[in-house]
Image (tube, rainbow, N blue to C red; front, top):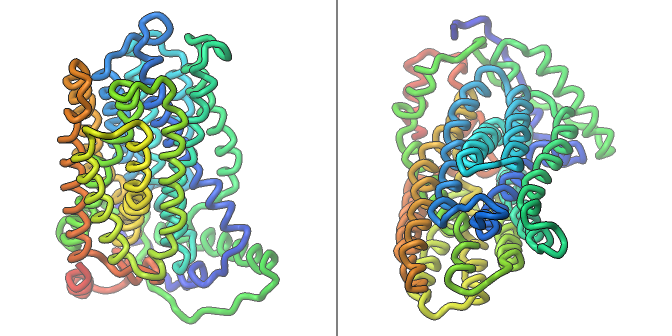
Length: 492
């Protein structure tokens, strides 16, 4: 296991990075990136339908704490799924796993729609998260390995930001589905979950045409297949662009292995790149607490404290701002640079969240939504950059598992504790109808975001416009161990 099977010199990375943008790249964006729409749809439906799920007659009789627990168990499933599928993605390839994880999601969300009791609902939410978590690892690694270097930052951030397209769609869907004059109350929330499965089927049909990562193939002894895929991509891009591609001179020599030992992966994260490990952990914890705490319980906050019966419009407006932030700020991560933009988006969103905590006593549903929209315009690009960072700054052999590791650890700290804390705070404060009782959650989120921004300012990696192999050389690069240790130590 993990023994060297041969050495090759290849120009595949340079050929992929020199490609101009073409329609073929949109296949990658649609086939792989749309999974974030599903995640946004799932989270928003749960947040928007909190009142429907609380009704013991037409729903499941959940309490505010139960709603928070459902959010937490969904995130717990995502963390475990990311770790489970992440190591399989690095071992068996990107394509096999991004098909399997989508199938897991589809089955679990159908089970959610047929929930007959709280325990069933919690179990289905866990496995829905399990599939989504696996998607994060498989998809981010595949996207970064197929998108040219000069477009990677904006594409990755834009795709991660498409979560909010699903969030807006989910929020608007809940408006008719929660209207008993349109759909019976006992069926509305079930149909909402069922629609997620229908969307997933459409994504699966597109995804079948996405190729395996050529970078993964040549490292695992399948260079002929990788070469064939790259030639087909080049022919397609030449046809679509109408221009003949120039040759490349840059090559890399690789020691091929069928599998990469887990001990080597662990050594990479904790020994060779300790500063990058701290950076990724900080970014994931900050954004996970902020989003999972605020957004999982946002609908509950509006209905409990601010007298809003139909939260869909408010959440949709909030979601549009998030997507706009990722879309408009994303190109700056390639032009201005990763370090500056990550620091800016984290610090400004954290500071604004802290100010909002102090203003809670005087907010209305409209003003809280406006404040949230401004905060998360910046935070959405920052949160997306956490995934971009984890997928760029570690060697290719560990990419999927590193994304999974930091997503799981960071989200476990911020994403599970956040919904539980906010659910508890809402339950405690609801007796007095005093919204200021949840301010402590805002202050914690502000501190975590600002802290992560400061860490990025000192430990961030200038990855804009650079090939993945120059940011972190593959572990299988053909050099002796002393050279590899020296090179890795210089790049921490």
